[in-house]
Amino acid sequence: MIINQLSEYLIDLKYEDIPEEAIEKAKLCFIDYIAVYLRGLESENVKISIKTIYELYNADFNSLNKGFINGIASHSLDLDDGHRLAQLHPGSVVFSTILAMISDKNLDLDISGEEFFEAVVSGYEIAIVLGMMLNPNHRNQGFHSSGTIGSIAAGAVASKLLNLDLEKTEHCLGLATTQSSGLLEADHAGTMGKSLHIGNAVYNGIISAFLAKNGFTGGESLIDGKEGFIKAMASRSYDDYADENGNIDYERIGEFLDNNLNKFHINEVYLKKYPFCRHIHSAIDSALALKSDLNGSDLESISSIDIETYRIASEHDNFNPKNIQELKQSLPYAVAISLACDEVSLDSIDELIDKGIFSEEVSEEEILKIKNIVNKINVYENEELNQLTPEKRPSKVTIKYNDKIQENTTYYPLGEVENPLLMEDILEKFRLLNPKFNMNKLQIIKHIEDNSIRDAFSELGLLDN
Image (cartoon, rainbow, N blue to C red; front, side, top):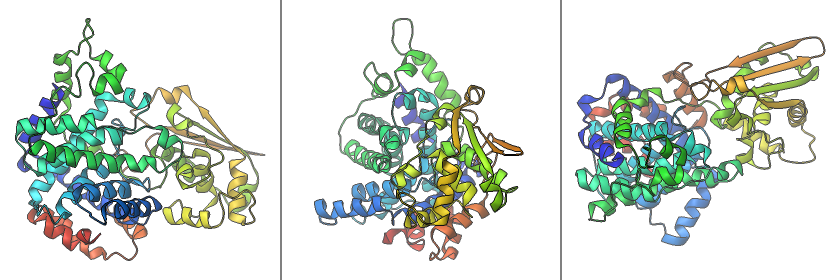
């Protein structure tokens, strides 16, 4: 069964088995996580969540509540890492779980730098492999994989940190699976519920590990049983792996896991530059490529802008966003902002909000320029581009003027391994998001494998939040 194989993998993975490439990618992902998490603590989502914790628990920020806040903070900005084929965001779950458990003074838990990488790499691996196994069917059935599969990944990380034996690890993963939740409608509706999914996943993973530690049973059939996760939440995947009698073919499932587990998929994780839904990024890149040939007067002479993309991206066609959550899911506005503004950043979006981008009556020249461009945009689903997904995430932007046509197609948005963001790019992202942070503190991450993680987190200021 899947839970059994995942648990054996968790128990067996040791630091010396992890390639240097995966260690270095984990360090890059960790720096990226800290950048997004620290800025995310300032978001309205987190302010409301902290107020609620105070109201309910009298400021008891134990590992559960801390994990809840961490998950929300790290996913609120739409800047956290992800995996193209798995269609989820592993880093916000994995690192939030570790940070919550290490920072809980009541637990007095510390791990070595080597154990840190064991937890990180295994958490990413389990999240990504399950995502690859179940998507796009799971996603197309209406579930937000970062919350659902994220719950299982958080349980995996927490069980690794607690050094649970095989049986208790299986129960932990079973308990985390039965608590899996997260509906994509929260994403489409433009609500804070999307970030709630990550906070809830971390909470579920941690409590599952402690329940299992103390003897609470979860069972090993929760993912692939007849009424388990796959059957209930990715029914087409269940059918794909079922035999002629409608039962899961465990030989085929086992073959998939054998071929994909322990392949260090963290190396395939993308990092994000723009605070918009990932499905929008290739169109942003194409718009920015065309912008390099534009000047201010050219914007006025645009007659139309056609965005052709794959189905999921084309569904992000909100031409009238009412809040920041809806804006981050709006393909038309993302392209318009890319063409009209000096930069596509969190700060620039905050400035646009202050200038009244959601207002019906607008006088600010920059907002008028954006809305004028939006009115010229058409969004189309392109069947040829559909055929290229999920291996690629392509978008084609065509700008038509009175006397000329310009077009650009992006197949791999910036941040994918085929079009990577490098360490210097992530450090610049960190500076822009957290201008008051002492960047010298990040030096400890270079050799974090040689440190106590509690000491390293303290040096980074992560235990103070």
